[in-house]
Image (tube, rainbow, N blue to C red; front, side):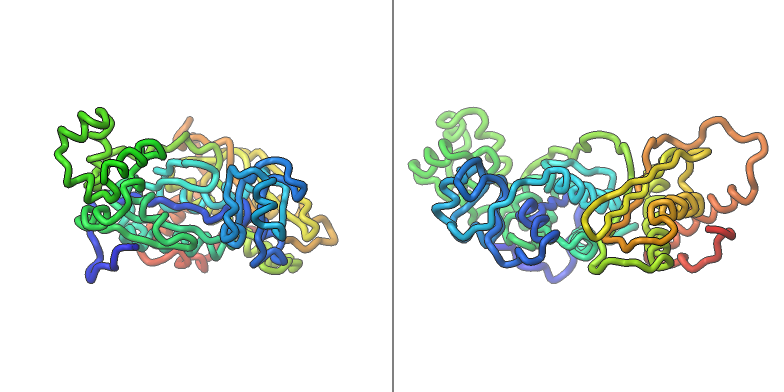
Length: 399
């Protein structure tokens, strides 16, 4: 059971989010084929019983189907299941869009897999609000921009954040406020602690230790003698202590944003407006992480799901809204051709990233300098008052 919401907003000295995409592979299949909604979708394996289940929708899970199960058993449990071959390229594409949302809030993102991650948002309060508000905003953006649901846990550390995200799946949102950890943990099964697997869990339960409270009631020295030195770490988790940092897997290689339309869009001016909005988001993220980009890539997906990309190498590395908009518009015109075609998805990615401040220009373009300064001023305004402010300000001709 999730903890009750506090009467006053909790104060986090350290704030960790765990975001877990619910039934990710199966949910992507439903996203791309809405006729599957409400049906038991099983990704991996075949209706003939060959292979292994990689993922199952919640409708399929009600029949007992789960990942790593043989397809033969899944067929017996759920004979009317819809078996689909996995599409890892597509799942990776959607995952990248999800992780791009994470990166809008913090650079401290530690992927656990293609569909879940830890985020350290401890220093993000002035920009984006309190940690629970950040968690809600991330969850809403995943739903609104991508069309999927995620479960989010907010807590003072990684162990508690992951525990929180598991408490109300699917589409859950749970906050474990500092100071409430012990009360929450005491009533949970001891198997909820990281490191308590099938064998150790069986031993503990055979010794009468079924709940975390039962574990804490035993003398520490006795537990360590009986179960080994690793029990010391379990006892730390049992009282909600976990000092492990969020460790980003690697430096960013690219920064991008994309959007999938609810209905195909054919109007050229509407597409340009949407593309400009995506460009502004990419440019802002470049500046936030102190990057400039040397390459831009436009992605366009058509109603038949074919995807085309167009790239350009920039004359100079940039983080400018105006310059990225202009280049992206040229790429869009090349992708659409003279007659134009409706699009299902559009996206822009900046790559070949580097740090600004290389060889200084002897005669810098004053207009470019002013635009760069304006971009940074607008970043501060949007951080304080909202992302939409400032978008109506005039820009250079041709932008």
